[in-house]
Length: 496
Ligand SMILES: [Zn+2]
Image (cartoon, rainbow, N blue to C red; front, side):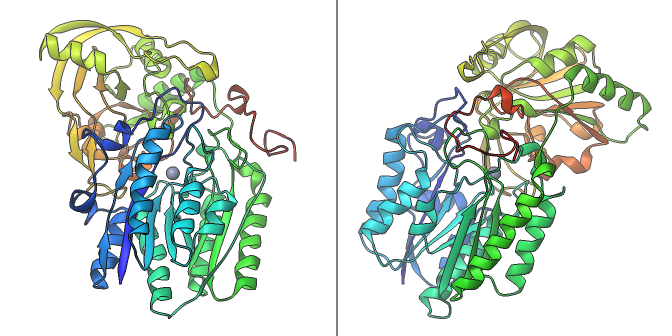
């Protein structure tokens, strides 16, 4: 038995000005890892591709990994990058195999294709018409028919923050291996609802997604090979952005259809609960300060969540609105993670540890989709630390995976320690702070540029969270986003 195992992951924010060349998938090398290097990068990690490698080795199967390509979310993927990655995968399939296992995102938009994953699956299906294809997908998948029509099994993450990537890989991989062993005949039904759930209301700690995912678990306990509700990624102006569901059963297409329709109906009934209304920033800052005044000593930080500028949703990670409000308010005993500003890092490296510097920090990237110019802020302080920004996740999300923040520095700006980094990395893991010598659990305030994933490794440390409406291309204000291509009518853009 010979398997092709590969990864192609990118969540595309079509409003983001951050470019997506091949180098963004390469993480410091010339190109994304292939072959033994790809296996070494993911074996034993909490990823879906890690689960595929384990399943293949456990089954004594021969396998190849032509490419393992994952990039932090950003704007549409360059055609050359897409053709490089998709080409590696299709060539490996064409060389001959019994099955294909893919770790994909589900919301990849390229300069040419609105549905990067559907196009890849269409090419694989054309190269190997009868070969089973199993796919693990992110919960933020924007589902197109080409994905369902050309795959054998689709299985999505059932947690947000995504702490079950490995289990999702196992679910997709096991169903496919069962088919190869003639122990199962996967049959799949999928569908969409015209709704764009707000990301800030998608967490699986909260209703209604908690209950939707619980129903998926019940279906799997009752015999479904995989049941998935994809809440969708709304910061993509494409026709089929939004919520969808897929159910895979063992040779029972009527049951797959019925269960899929049930999931879609449940989601539709809960549509109003997926709407998020942000609080004005001024009010949030005042609330954070009164929470801090009343908090018992040693009780953990007040998290200030800068949710409009999360790099793991395509944010530039350099807007200064929330950090600026913290500086204006004179907050003390605070840390901020992080501002993406490679030039500022280089200035701090040139000045050296201990030096006093004045920087035009952040705001380097314009955001034409929001008609906003980049707005740096002058900040003075002392360079506290310089490091290479490399660390491995220790928490439940992507455990063991290497994170590369690039050259990084900490600026001590009086009351606030500001982490400045050269690659986009969302703060969801304590190791990101350990790498820069900050213990967030002992701070009074911690600003995080994140939406929901911070909960994976940092929520347990927090005394309270205050969601701060700053600025950026992952804003939850749909009125600011000018969706032009998404299908209409769609809730809540239209009153349905
Ligand atoms: Zn996601």
